[in-house]
Length: 332
Ligand code: SAH
Image 1 (tube, rainbow, N blue to C red):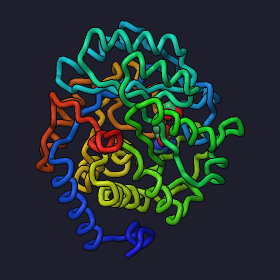
Image 2: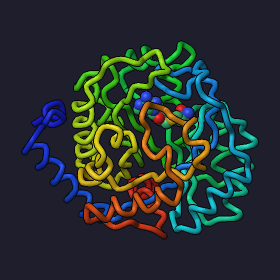
Image 3: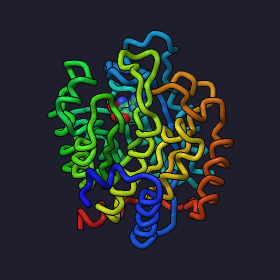
Image 4: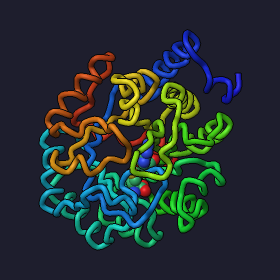
């Protein structure tokens, strides 16, 4: 069966696909699920992506930036609780000197792997972040269909530039992650199959269903159930295409089904991102409506995530960095 057909599997056949992918994960990356403490340190953004709740034009939210001290406290929480890795995520346009200085401080104080998810910068700036000590970078391509990419982004955001950024990140030496949104209005199954071809070359992938946000121009009716199934099938197929890749069970899945993240783990995902943003800021970092964990504390999220992992018989891999084995193969 080809990818386009496999992506559309339902019922028994779908369960079989997910089982096979989980088994493949066990054989290639083990039964560990790695933690990445997600610090959403600023919702300030210079971009106006048509789908995103923190886009520049959304004036319904209170803009915030955590102080360096607040971010270090989040990092300490992750270190103390053996998460071993953090993700620094924000809207676009963060000051490069602030970022570089922050990375250095975190690395000086805590033995943590750092993933950055800050959007597009020049190769020189990526180099500075890498030299400061960050090991990983996430930049979702959102969709590999250039025309569709153009429809969901403002004119100043260029598909080729995003591709170039991903290439630059690899050249600089990062473990590089990308991803797509599944179920963007106008996206086809063929598009998703092409996305998989692109994503299988990454070291890490985070992808999940597109969830509309009321305060954006792209607030259209979508088929949640279908996008949920496609998202899980994407995870399973990616695992089969790229055995050693790190795949995140993303929070967006949980908007559609309470056990969405567990389902992704069962379909071959091996990374999870508990939110560690201080509770008081969470309501202002809603990329989409009904984002889970907004009323929870970092401690709540830690317990909840640990239980979710155990509930599906996998191992919460606290105390392990969980570097991408795919990356290690790539740079050998
Ligand atoms: N500014 C950073 C971080 C963006 S937020 C960057 O450009 O990389 C991280 C991801 O959230 C985005 O890449 C996008 O794929 C996802 N996202 C944003 N809005 C979303 C929505 N409405 N539904 C699902 N995912 C969304």
